[in-house]
Image (cartoon, rainbow, N blue to C red; front, side, top):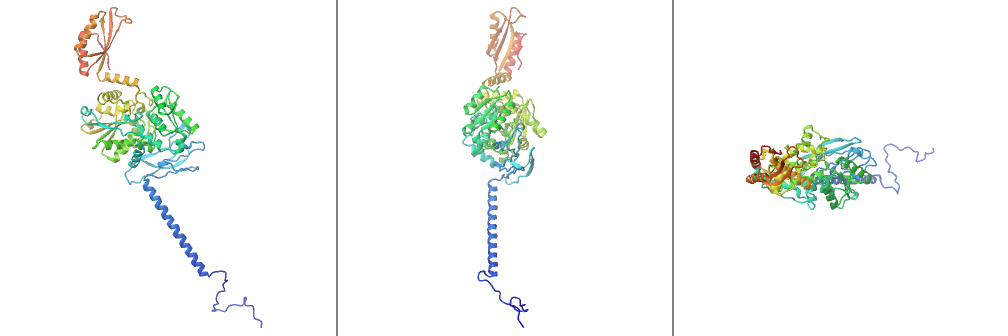
Amino acid sequence: MDRPPARNRPRPRGTDYPEIQSPWLPPYTAVAKILLQLFVYVAVVLFSYAEELISRRNNDKERNPEGAVLQAGCSKEQGSLENSSLGQCQPPNQLEQLKGYVEEDGLGGNAKTWKLKVLTHGEEPPVMPFKSRVCQETSSFKLIRLEDINTAASQIQSGVQVTPCTYSRLSKKYGMELYLKKEFLQYTGSVKDRGVLCLLASLNQDQQRKGVIVASDSNFSMAVAYHASELQIPVFVIMPTNTSVTRVRMCRDYGAVVISFGGTAKDSRSHAQQLAQKNDYLYLEEEDNVKYLSGLGTMGLEIFKQVPNLDAVVFPAGGPCGLLAGSAAALKQLNPQVSVIGVQPESFPVIKHSLKMSHPVESQTWGGHMFYRDLSEPCSRKNTLQLVGELVDKIVTVTEEDILIAMLRLLEYERATVDAEGAIGLAAIAAGKLPELKGKRVTVVLCSGNLSLTLLQQCIQRALTLDSQTCKFSLWLSDSAGDIGKLLEILDREAVRVLDIQKEHGFVTSKLFMTKVTCVAETRDKQQAAQLRSALLERYPSLEWMQQ
């Protein structure tokens, strides 16, 4: 019987044969062992790499505690902006350098908003959604921490002055320890130097190379003109045609290209935005930018260091209330017991109305006032307004007469020439609007001193009249020189100095042989002015006393 081939022969049960292996292949157990070792090695490498990434991310968070980077929800990929500012969803033709800055609706851009809130150290910031007209973006609260303000102070220390905060001779007059923070001594004459320099220094090289453009003749524009030139940044300033020659000349002396356009600040702003869009300039304006507010907040740091045991600080509270918000953030974190008080003009209660309505309130009658300037600007910055509502203890209003008297007192006692914005804080104290500060240690911020000579002259003359230091009256005298001599005798007896005297006869037809004499005299106070008036009425019943 023939046996089947070996390969087809069935294997008996229970019989084990050794496996036949090729001399070119390793044993199966060795292969499995090598694969296992390779898998373990890869797992260890991946685990180490993950630990390194987590450690690096934690270190970054420690360096930048507020740094929740905001991501845009539109199709175009956006990089994170410096200082965690809000990403911008832009159409393809939108200027790249406009990222991080507010644009007007007329440019078709997307207005971006920063949520401002002061948190204590270690507190986690809440996250809130933000919706844009074009696309939806995810945003977080923008924090103004004490670390931000300290960093800003280091950045601007070589470009701005540490202005004096000196004890005032007005302290005895108003019954308190009064200190004056003299920010009008900055190079451009206002506190805006602090915020502007911090803002410009934070721009990237591409933005600095292309240049910046601002509108209006405000203190902000003056500061941008100077500091941009110092940083070798091309700067263009669009001013209304009715801007004073002095301001135009100063901006040009700083190194800016000045263009006069439009009869109002709104016209200049619209033209500046069009130029920015066409020429790749970065359009700047006062806004809810953390860098800008932190720069302004450095003044609060200085006040706290210069005046120990401080009880209260009085600030101007105009429409662009960045100084009030930034400095309040610094002071309240250093000492929550320090009272922060804002003062605004009665004619332009921008902040008070906005806080009452819980949103910025604008009016066609506000903005561009020659005397009030920044104080009369509309409030269009919601987040800064919210910060003021949270941190500022009180806001009061004063009249134009109160401001003029305060300007006069600063000239008399401190030899300080300031404008309405610089004097409005002292005006509230002089007018008795803050009686709770009696006997306390108070700092008043003199934030601006940019006043044209013609306007300064008008303000001084009006303030002297309001303070009864000058008086004006008219009366009728006969043509004889003896009557004028008798008038001068009365003025001499009352110890009054004659500043001006005029005779009018040719155009007076009601009394043929009479002359109308108008006299301007200098008096010490209201009491002497009233005494002079009584003496003149006894002799001249037809006296016309010019009211204030």
